[in-house]
Image (tube, rainbow, N blue to C red):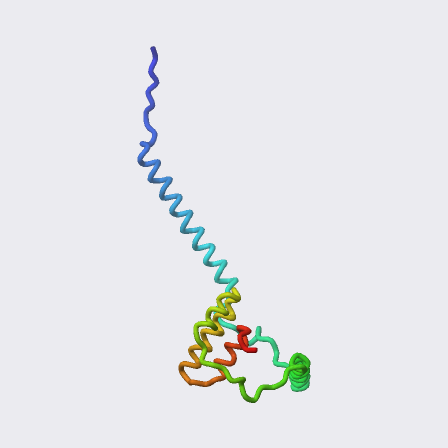
Length: 137
């Protein structure tokens, strides 16, 4: 029987250390490269050169006229309210009605109206809460 003897070479522990060091070096290089690329893509502060130009006075006036016309058309059929309708202080029945609506905006508005009424006593808060929940007849 013949046994082969290997002379020389590198022990396994040294190979593992070299491989780990190479992997760590590659990871550091990858992170540095990524950071360098990200720095070029990201602008840290807005530049005066990249800001859009301000509209001319005529263009600004035309835009304002357009907004006013849209507003008038949107609220043409709505009567302005000078005094809110009489309402009782917002209580638990308003909260229950808001929760039953399953509308989170309605729940938030009723809660804000309850807090506003408690802080100021202004009946407009109670009227708004009754209107949004449909309890105002």
